[in-house]
Image 1 (cartoon, rainbow, N blue to C red):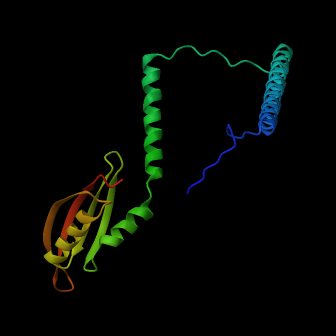
Image 2: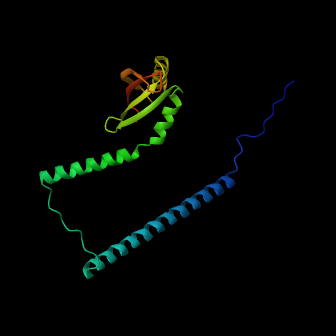
Length: 182
């Protein structure tokens, strides 16, 4: 036998506690609103005071307004733009980090390959590299390492030539270009 006896006719809700919580939340919101209005009015009064000080300084001659410049002529504008381009080029060159490039090259360079010269082209974001390898396999390994590296995507071998070494033997001289390196 299963007895289910429920004497409550509705769900129990403590209305007194609920009204108290609502009152506390409303009081907190009113206090926050009062603080925000007070801050706004204080900032508005301070802005008016600063504007009044600026007017007083301008009337006393303490602050001179910036002189109005006449509009630039076409030649002056072109000269200014070329100066800006020149300055941007210097900033681009200064932003280049040689240590980062040399560290990346060191990571892909086999022991049997030597680098003689690196010439960056800042405008294209590429560099040319001249070096020597002991044999064709060492050069091939260097090119494969460069191509497989995520830092160097487009590697182009420009020339290679076998050079006789004065101390005996020979070296394979090469030059290549790496595009999109920086």
